[in-house]
Image (cartoon, rainbow, N blue to C red):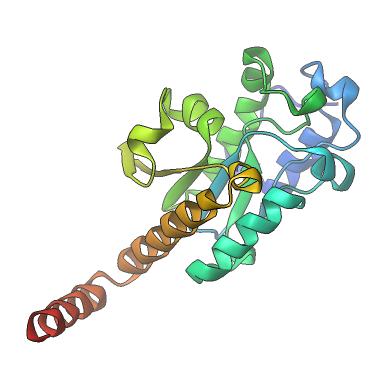
Length: 211
């Protein structure tokens, strides 16, 4: 049975996951094999939000474990970000038939789970992967205009980038994802130690001037 109300002080990622696994709130629950709550640490500094689980995710109950997941893993590795140190989830927690874009009622049904995960983790940055995540969370229409940018909304920072699946058929886009995640990594390091990074930036600037 899915709880319709909860005490935020007693909420946990495990509790949310158990509710997601049993969730009957939209029609996707009738066609899924496994719900995919998301995975990662409550101490994560970054939450990655994609569109929806695909075939491999539906079979395994884990996010980003197929071809798009391998591209994301590679981009994370190049950026020096450990997958175990972030939280990864999707706008909807169950696979839409034929991998179609999630419908409005499906997004609305899943949104409270996502909001609770964000509230518990309180990330430094939320990385929105692709147009569906961008439009669902920030109401964005064109990802091209803000791709690679940090947007601040209601005290929360968001990085907008492409969905890794876009690079499956267009290898040139993989470089864009890697570039954005590299910028994300630098941003997190500066947040963690602003004084040290300001000094390093100054030293780098002086070195550039001497060349």
